[in-house]
Image (tube, rainbow, N blue to C red; front, side):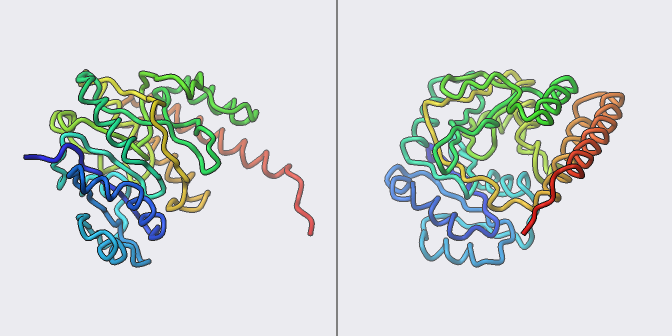
Length: 279
């Protein structure tokens, strides 16, 4: 008999956070017979060894190198036996009640392919980009203008109401096994960023709903295993272009490239006028 839930926890050089993440639900996971898979994406800080010592009931998969968010999660998905798969970043603290709640929600809503809880910062504030709209050119243009003007998130931010969204964050994402059997795993061509947006789009194209539901909340510290800002921006734009090449026509790809050139150029121009720090 398959376990009701498989938690796939992805980590990269976040040993302490990974142990804290597991400690939040490990005892209940054993009682409920949930499967726990920890994918170590090439850590050099002893994460895999520490997890094996502290949580021998967890399956630890070690990759010799960091192969990215999609490939790392796919390693866990391939081993998963649960009817519901919960993809979890190592910098997320989730209680057993949230895991059970998300699994129950999917069981009671057979038309929903994936559901994400409300993501909260370490200080308890809701994170704005837990869900969003498809990244069309019009959407990205409006978002870029708002960002340049410092006006915050583009979409109608409703952190306390459930939303049927175009996409939800992969930081803590519960997925119906039948969805993966139908559309496949995460696209390995995305190293970081846009793999969750791509997956959610493919779910919707196959007839599944994607839901953000703040009835459950988790703490997402965010960015703990991500690259430096400049590298993160480069990876983000590269993944965005890959997404456009996959889902939109060639003209949209060219227009996106031009828009990114203008946006990054304006960002550099604005930075050049910023006041210099004095000691």
